[in-house]
Image 1 (cartoon, rainbow, N blue to C red):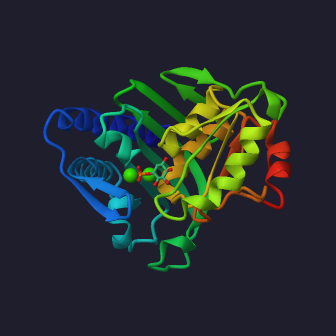
Image 2 (image 1 turned 120 degrees about the vertical axis):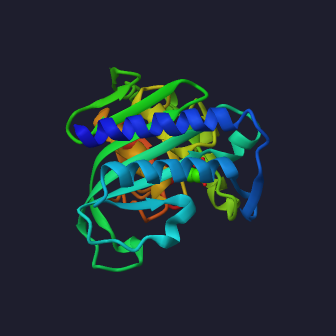
Image 3 (image 1 turned 90 degrees about the horizontal axis):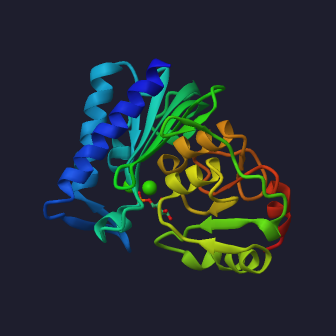
Length: 268
Ligand code: IPD
Ligand code: CA
Ligand code: CA
């Protein structure tokens, strides 16, 4: 698929730029409380947008650092971009961060400037972790891959045999604590890695069995959720309803423990 191949190339090109820039002084600014952006996030996003414009001039773009500038919703496709997912890790030289790029075929945009009216079908996704040398990708109906090898979710059938991950947003962190506490009690353990896009890929390749988080944005989860589904996993919101990319919360599992996880989350 041409779009996926291009998306992978673009993500890898952005990854090279990130690794090169990380050798220089990084300039960090705070967008909100504990919500950071660096000159490298911005440079990565500019590179990705320029590449998309070059190859697919008719496609629309929704990118984290310039999200408010999205206006073109007449396009057939929209690229959803997180130029660095895991910026906090990046600023501390922790290698767990990624570039996330997804392509959505638009079914309805209501011709609105307000991008949360968008709906459609994810057709391609890539999550590239440059400092780890790991690239995950999938095209709709074509399976999921990790560094060229086909991947599948884990075989764990019970919460007791599951290892999980979650994340805490920069504000309203407490909201996740009852869920954290419940999963601590019911599963083998919880990880907090700090890149939702990559956490989803860890579900896809079977390293993790369960991932959930609240207060996310479409660019955190678009690529990873397609990769999980293509690897045989399940993705929904934390109540078990169909995933809404703009709905903020997500639950992704290997599929076998999805129902049990939703049952544990009930009434929290
Ligand atoms: C963050 C990461 C993190 C999640 C945060 C996100 P950013 O994205 O995905 O894992 O817990 O809620 O905001 O800010 O590093 O792109
Ligand atoms: Ca992000
Ligand atoms: Ca980001």
